[in-house]
Length: 243
Image 1 (cartoon, rainbow, N blue to C red):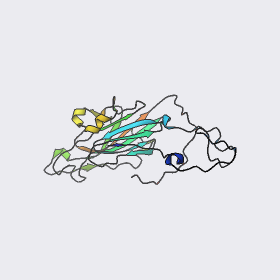
Image 2: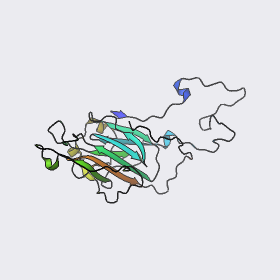
Image 3: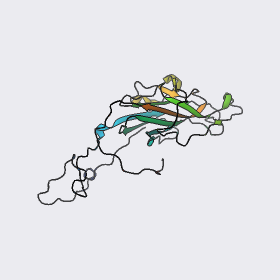
């Protein structure tokens, strides 16, 4: 299943009839500011277009939530099965701090799945700008089990998750590097092969089977980057629900 993040369409594309203009008034074109409240408002501003965005593809076994520069960008809409690819269009801003929480399907008390099985995780990501998951990412496990692979008396260990784990200034310098796993070890399902992940690596924390909640972090630099657009967001999305 592919999930696309779409921008709202203009009223004219929705079939609504725009209000008639005054006689002799030249209709505004796409590159011009519309609905100016006062003379000169919006003059000289350059707005981003979809051509300025980059496509992001993500596959997680089994679930993820992703932030870029401290802002929520994508949440996997399917908690468990079927495994799915999430694709969104992102307006880039560099340097780019990517923070992801990924969860394998595991009982919170036992660490088991399907009642008596030890599951395995896996995460892979690719941006159209060439950013991919690899061994340079940081990865830390915050929930693991069943400890010692003891399926007869399964138990889990949990570490407190920092409240600001997705922030750009979060200190992850002591975190270990992500472990890279083969495609065969992860065993992705069909949707993975329908999306572009060329050049990206499957990553997780040290133990693909026992580590059930993992946070990944990476910082992407792009020296000399200057956005083509000059506008800044003014909408306040703080306090919005995550799902």
